[in-house]
Length: 102
Image 1 (cartoon, helix red, strand yellow):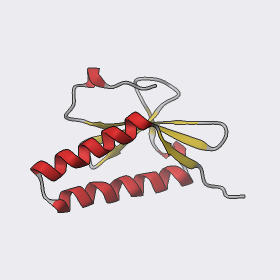
Image 2 (cartoon, one colour):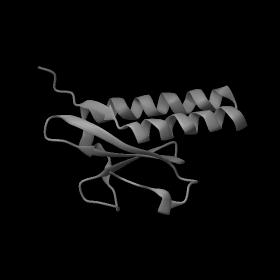
Image 3 (spheres, one colour):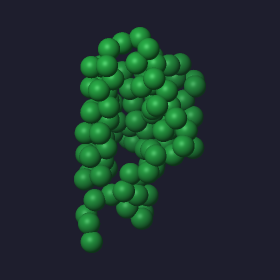
């Protein structure tokens, strides 16, 4: 049995992540896009090994927040079945009132 947790992207979070990558492709270089993708992968690897490594989100006690490259946040919930639900991929430049965590 593996000691790792399983990361599950909820559909809206995955869509938000892909939208962010698409926006970066339009306005920035492919190097920036790759850097973000690699940092997200590193963050997910850390979550799989130790999901408690990142701080509890201000928005709710059962939700945690990982900051990726200062400009993006991954909000997630740790479940008792050793899964982690990625609830939101949220660029910090967005209006905080637009953040929904379900």
